[in-house]
Image (cartoon, rainbow, N blue to C red; front, side, top):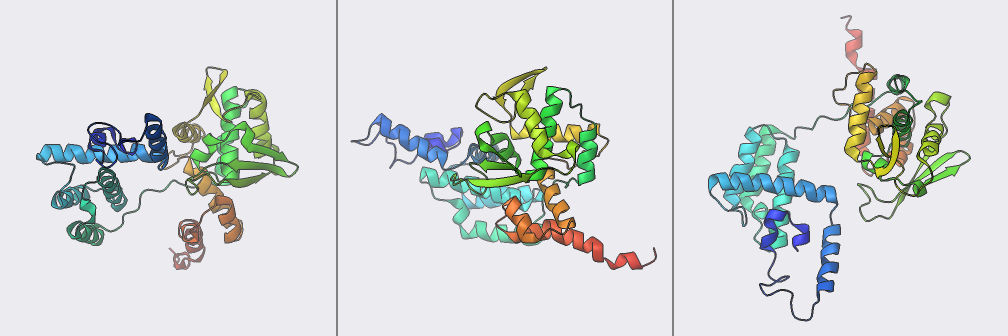
Amino acid sequence: MSAALPASASSHAHPSFETATGLPSGLTEADAARIAVAISAARTEATRTVYANVWSQWERWCAARGIPALPGDPLALCAYLTERAEAGKATGTLDMSCTAIRHVHRMTGAEDPVASEAVRQVRRGLMRIYGAAPRRLARPLAVNEIRQILGSIDRTTPIGIRDTAIILLGYASAMRRAEIVALTLADVEPKPAGLLLNIRKSKMDQEGHGQVVAVAHGQHALTDPVAALGAWQAMRGETPGALFTRIWASSVSLEPLSGHVVARMLRARAVAAGLDGTRIAAHSLRAGHATAAALGGVPLDRIAAQTRHRDLTVLVNRYIRPLEALATTSSRELGL
């Protein structure tokens, strides 16, 4: 069980799984290793990292109060949530705290304080008091802004060729940053009309059933995502591995990128091109695709098929309605 727990909570593993004397009779170390791998794979590394950070915050708060974090007292959790809400933490942050705390308690066999009626009522009350304050969303990039960014990139350098390919492929495919950096050479299938990209695992496909995303040839040579990727592949070489890799000085390595590198790169490139970098993140490519497609009159079902949104209300509320509101606002007729 400790494979799924934050390090500070692993000493509280459930006694039915591990005993003070070791494994239950009849089980081997090989059995334990296979179980640990399966339990660890139940959640992504990113999720485990978030849980560990959230749990450490709860532990520090409890330590400062002189109360145990595990098992946690429901009233202590109520105090923790109300204090953080008063400090300005969003409802989503409080929900994540409850999720991580519940996870650790369940995995250790301790009574879950999140399940108590007191905590349930406090969470409901905080929602009414503070509302579900949304996080600041990434700003969608328009096509002309993508052109402006690309116009400031030196495409004669390896890093310029790579960054151009990432920006254009990310924008044209509407992929998430984690999906972009997870691509390998084997995941790219050239076709006469463009490319097919095999996404082996994603946020909405944690079990790895696989999804395919298509990218068509661009209408302009300087913004053709297929040509940009081809230029990068020629620079990178055909050695199997990650599609997008790190560059040290002018030397192309085989070390894969992280999603954070993509986010920092895009923001830096946008600022260098004269754009305001506020709220520009890797998601600005995906959001920009959806917004530009909606502006272009692409039907909602086609946009959803490209972005792979299961919940169409996300597309409607974040991309379609804001555009409609600007198009139909009566403020235009006030003569101001």
